[in-house]
Length: 305
Image 1 (cartoon, rainbow, N blue to C red):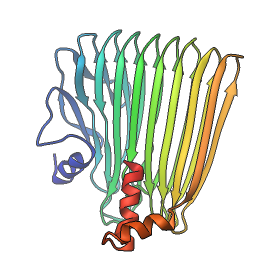
Image 2: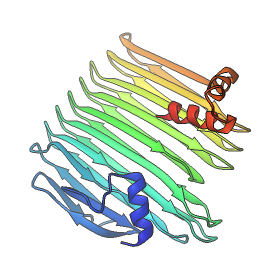
Image 3: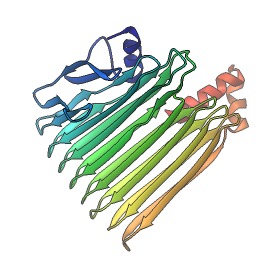
Image 4: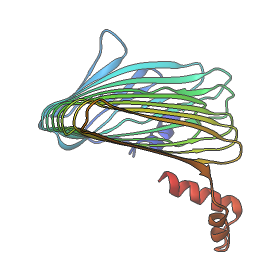
């Protein structure tokens, strides 16, 4: 691996000069390191770029790492990763992405992840995105996540974009069977002329299934964000969608949460709030010795934490 990859890994994953257990490191469209464990097998795809991650029921609180890095401009990386999680497995997946631009050409990563989650399985999925570098080329990241959850399964999805990404289109779809639970937490920061689009579609298809979707974002500079969510309640189920955004400078946020109740016992709620940082918050922190800029940064950090 090159030095840029090493730096990016330290920002997007638990990288400390190596990973323990199963991992796959992707660098500029190729494999920079791969290791399976007794209960998690990682195999290359042969029909398209990407890997297959097979997680057996023996995996209990085990962690697998699948970070991807683009380290210079002129690279457009497309990858298809399939996760098969056996009944009863309990796994943590760390899947960050870093894109570095050092020139005038675009640097891009597009990761398409598909999850097939078995009965009573538990998955915690963590994903950080960051753009770095002094090049004028765009740093683009377009993640696509497709989730199929079997009966009484559980998935917690924690995604965070921590800055520097020029454009991002984030698409997530999920279908939940009886008793399945999905928790989604999105945290998003844009600045300058950056744009970000988040699109969530969750279909609650089994009795007792539920989703809790919360997005928190900060739009700074002249950046633009578009948030769209659809929760479809096709049975006795519960769904909650919440979008909270802070505007700084000339930032713009468009939020459009949707609910579809296809059953009389579908219980669905959505909330949306967009506004600027309250002046009294800034004033209070300034009385503690912070400058106005430092106070603003502290408030943003706390909001996105």
